[in-house]
Amino acid sequence: MAVRNHSVVAEFILLGFSADPQILALLFVLFLVIYLLTLLGNLMMLLVISIDSHLHTPMYFFLSNLSFLDLCLSSVTVPKMLENLLSVTKTISVDECLTQAFFVFLTAGTECFLLSVMAYDRYAAICHPLLYGQMMSKQLCIHLVWVSWGFSFLNAVINFIPAVKLEFCENNTIRHYTCELPSLFPLSCSDITINLTVLVCSSLIHGFETFLPILLSYVHIVSTILSISSTSGRSKAFSTCSSHLTAVSLFYGSGLLRYLMPNLGSSLKLIFSVQYSIVTPMLNPLIYSLKNKEVMEAVRRSLGKLLLYFR
Image 1 (tube, rainbow, N blue to C red):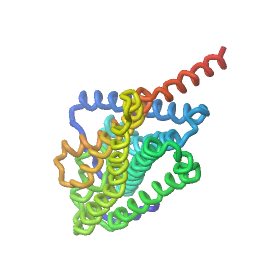
Image 2: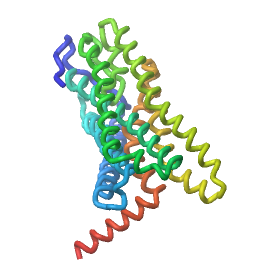
Image 3: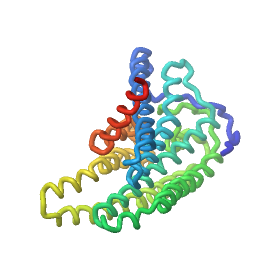
Image 4: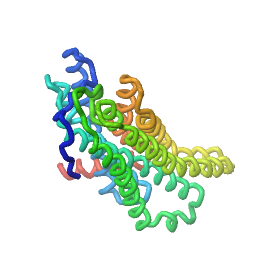
């Protein structure tokens, strides 16, 4: 999406972390390791799910899309952040900044929808196991993923259009490590009333329409699990949801607070943003592999095949 030149300010300065060179060097190493682990973990999930026929089910189809989204979300922000951690100027052009903000909004929004879709998948599997194949057909799964991208793209455009009309003058320092719409608004010399209204309203609607299906799904799931007579049966049913619940808790809490409360203090902004856009994409592969016997077995089978191949 093209971004036009709209202000006297030609570039922003990203000052998200300490100015101490030693601390910045340590942060560079830390975030580089996190990013490499994110790439390795999510690429491994994509590879294992694609080559292991046992994982060609709706649940793992959505999980592979989640891994792809985590790769995108992390890659939108982390490479530029790593560059700035070692740079003296720490600058980013206005066009590049707005483009980055758009793709952060798009990928994070799509992940919200996908987590909602995954909750419905768990509801179908636990509450209607005999009808699961009909309820979660391959065609429906593909449509749900495209709908997730489509609605998130629309939501990003709705916020992006008024943002490109803003004028930025004099103050060009963003006290953040990346470009996000809530961080840009205070720097504008234009009236941001419309921007803030659109941001809060769209975030509320987006959060409601994605979190409500999760809530309703788990109300039915918990009711079904409690009706299971055997302890082992309840434990097995709950274990299929624990990974998803962990991912939802990590992502939703920090992401929604970041966008619903644009005037957060700078330290809270950094914490919430690091949580949902850097830490969570790294943790998701661990959450879904360590807590999932099928994935661990698939990883062992894949490693076994690779070892045999190279012998």
